[in-house]
Amino acid sequence: MFGSKFARTALCASVIALIGTVCMPATEANAALFSGNEQTAQLPNFVQLVEENGPAVVNIQMIRNARTVEGVGIPGLDPRGAEIFRHFGIPFNFGGPREIPEQRGTGSGFIVSSDGIIMTNAHVVEGADELIVRLTDKREFKGKVLGFDKQTDIAIIKIEAKNLPVLRIGDSSKLKVGEWVAAIGSPFGLDNTVTAGIVSAVSRNLPSDQYVPFIQTDVAVNPGNSGGPLFNMQGEVVGINSQIFSTSGGFMGLSFAIPIDLAMQIKDQLVENGTVTRGYVGVYIQELSQELAKSFGLTSPEGALITKVEKNSPAAKAGLREGDVITSLNGTKVTSSVTLPMLVSSMRPGTKVKMTVIRNKKPMDIDVTIGTNEAAQEKAAATSNQTKLGVTVRELSEDEVKSAETAGLLVTRSSGLAAKAGIREGDILVSANGNILKKKTDLTKECKKESVLLLVQRDGGRIFIPVQFDKEQK
Image 1 (cartoon, rainbow, N blue to C red):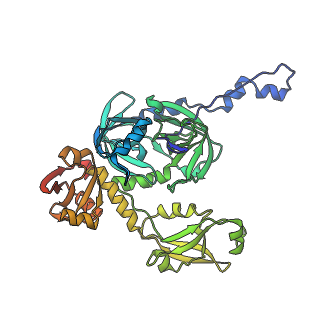
Image 2: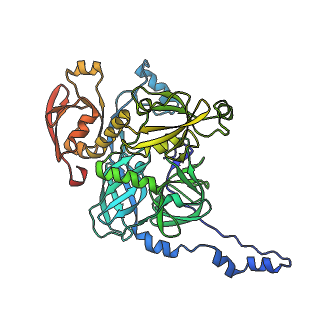
Image 3: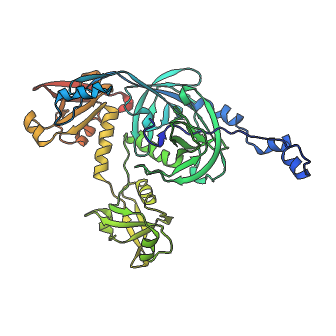
């Protein structure tokens, strides 16, 4: 979970007031500054916030079942060469199957609907065969994933319960650097742990593939806090705890939350469709340096420089060109090459926007209609299949089609409903509900129904396997 400096976990920070005394005469101003009454008046009180909101924060336990996987060898290496690795104490499994034991993890989440809709991080639920949601009153429920989006690290799960406490959603765009915030979560499985701190920065861009304008705080965060809420002093959720910066795996004073404004947009799509559709314009861009900015007639290195326009893309149809510098989108300033993808991806396809660009050292406005990225949709389809049916698949290569004498989708991982129905890794899904499967989107389409009847090819033979979806998984 802490494979990089930006480790995934949830956001929170302890506040310690250090008040010392000095053995020397104090002025009236100093005396007032260090008086107990003044200190009490200045420091925030989180008691009411926790009492009102704590019951709507949940602990999420993730369980991934034990499984057998085929070992991976090194191309061109004689199997006997594996003994060299073992001789030096390096575990190495050449070829044959190996057992992976049951894996467990813990995270946090919060209730956004009284009928059991819960928000958390995608990395909390990804790969889970079973989710157990525990409330503060010690009740436990099985959680079902309605959908998750890895790009923003948002996931939505559902439990069968009614009349649950719900958190109030705030406006993350109104957050100011320096204001107090608090978080509640389950670090190391310790339920309803409260920490607090201040907002260190807003719209922070991290060196990752996520187009998220993170809220940076100094709230203490540790493993298990992932997915928990970040509150303002009015008791409103303004963020979802997601990441920390760490060289040790533990908290080092830098933690990051997903703005709730963005999270709610993703939540609505996941609840409705199980996947997220993002805006797309079809340009390749690069960051501006001071030298580049000067050569393009800019006074400061702000904006996104277009290096390539994709054919037949919304950008090409609108007339955008290589060498254009995009400086604003619908009046919102594009401060860097990272800002533009965040703005575009948050818009729904079909939305008409006005881009301000610098061309030939002169500003001009260009109207662009936001489109969709088919490659991204394919990826979303794969995520949807994995979430609902419980399989990860890929399309067969031409050689594999010839060898298997059929088209279809190769199962690379089976869990959840698929595993319970008997689908295994290495199976070929030939058809679904009588329709031949050629692309991942074909399977996604069939999985939107109440059930799916799969024709599976295994070891040269074929069998039909029915899978029935629960009401929340349709």
